[in-house]
Image 1 (cartoon, helix red, strand yellow):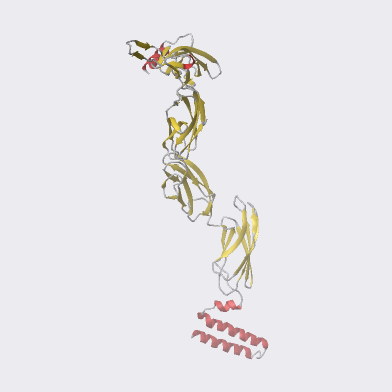
Image 2 (cartoon, rainbow, N blue to C red):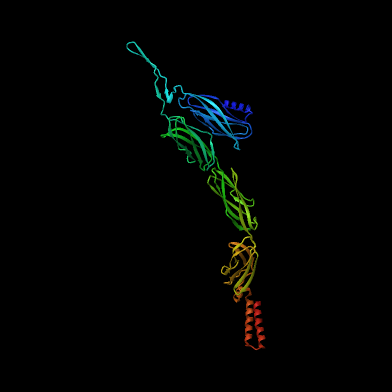
Length: 527
């Protein structure tokens, strides 16, 4: 790595002015013993325009791949990748590896950069390469003595076809931890290299414990010795609490795991919540108006939630601590006489301790006035024990009124009340209602009140005069014991008048008789 950094430093310092782009490598000649080697290639950019570069290589009889097929080159700087290659087992010879980089800017202007590296491959010490993969292994046959004293010796080398039946595979790919949010899917690429005999390999992903769902594509690869194939693992995170999980990619043949590569998955915590409010709230100005709000933790981590409301209102509780999927109930109370008559905007804000604000809603609260808020006029007509009230109602609200009717409060429950109904009263319109009250007993209604309603909503209230029974029966009922003598006086006067009308006494005698009776009643009243 120090050699790479040293080469990068001098490439940036002494880059040729003839071209703003230059392809470099950390070695021009590479000698390997065995089967594996690698060379680092990088591109230096000095013209201030960011570019993308894709790498390709002609490897001849070698096998290989780039760790990153494409890179992004900064405006002024360098970017590169490793070329990893391998030689067939017991291969001896040299190959000129030609590397090509296609470098393009955002406008599609491209430039081709090329570089050649000479690779010399030496097989392991026990190998000697022959045509058709025939390999000879050094051997020594000692001299053999016969009984007659002669000695026979041989220098024959025994050759055999090198075609082992062992199976070996390698998984190559980035080892950085994948960051993923719950519900998301991320794809990770891998390269499968066959280090043994040609075969078909099964690819599978294991682990995750139902928290990470992994899918491998393709599910199998057929590879010759030294051949490499591409595979992908799609990782899908369930809605789980944040943290690190692991999934393993395995290369399997005949049930035997030949290679295994762990995949680190970093699941990010999600802090979310949801608030449910009533669609509409209504009440009276002079009374407390109460309603509930429900908060649900829709995230993946335990979190504290709070609901904020206007300062004039009261909230219980002030905050709650919820696990993922849990709900909590908040009670909200608006004190009496804090809202204006009519419709009020009530702002509700929901916050989490980790995320902060996650939702706001404006709730409409209908506060009806406790005094008459619709103009009402009434005309009363009395006949014996029946009181008929004609009511004129004007809709002074901004919205239509439905099912408008009238009732009378403060009257005996035995009295019968009948009222007409107006199904719809538009804003500004006036309608007439009729209320008929039938007095069924001798009770009185000293403080009756006419109440006009729209459905269950009170829209007007008007006090009425006292309602008392009419007729002779009512007269007797209303007299108290203290005025009994006065009643007798009136009755006596009536009797005298009747007798006078019948003419039973003479015109001269009547005044004397009348006077005598009257004096007697007065004396009795004084006692």
